[in-house]
Image (cartoon, rainbow, N blue to C red; front, side, top):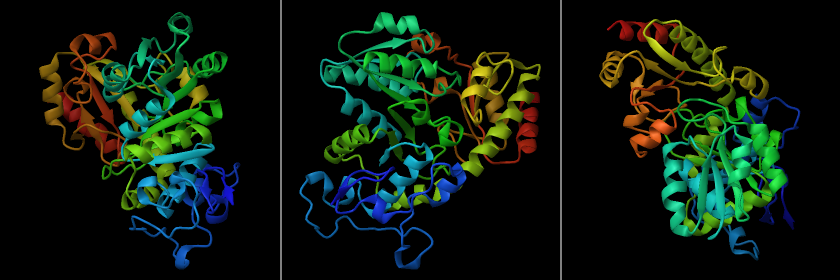
Length: 406
């Protein structure tokens, strides 16, 4: 038989309905994080999902190349369980894990766009995504227009007959601004576009794009989904048809995640809710402390009442995230002195892990953008991005305070 369970991809002879534990839609996300996608019955009675360190599997009469059981085709037992769990977390039809966040983003864009197509994208993007859209996709004959994240009239003006998709981020990197997410979905539906959102910063705990009507969400699973700064992975979640299209592309391009990394990500997802809620709470306290400090020029965090989109964040999200950014009164040299004086946060790129990470985006994650491009996006050279980890919030605040004094 050929079957597809909610949360899985079609696999000849092996429906996820038959092979994994489903969790009712009305169960809490923490219950889904623990139980969705788990094999039923448990394999060998093991409570924890085993690692299937096998590249290939018995042939079982599959008639389609993409259904043959082979680890590169992302259909090992580890892949299947993870796909079902991720889809359940966002209340979506299907999911796919990939070798990195950029593999997820590039795979989605290249699977929904062809030579001659055009894509709309918000004008403040993660540096890797910005370079992919503005520098790499044109080489494939795919054009783009960068538009204001909240200006629907600008989207209308930029719309072309060949426009096929619109791409936004739930929270912008690094200024944690919120696009007109409801407007994006409405605009995409009205114009027959595929709506794509990078949900990395929010995670499924704070926002679930499928519930709003987004066609696809992408994640750097390296960040909050895994949350331990110890693996590289990506995820695509959403429409079964579109996820299947991305899978078929990855089957040929080789962007699959290995079974051991699948196991680590699968294990980490079980604590996603606990981790993200703690990070939400700590980031809110830290942002409040910084906003009242006389050394601050600006603090960017949607949980602050002073944030221009605070009410929008309260309405759309279940939490305002563990990411914030800020600028000191002073220049780049003062920002670097402050970073050097910190004792707990690690000065490093990436985000979303148990360790607090802090970085100056202009020197790292957005270094690929020109100074003019960064300025146009509101990213000053002295801006500091802070990914709040799971350390005690009082200890983090005390460390920030001593570093500011230094």
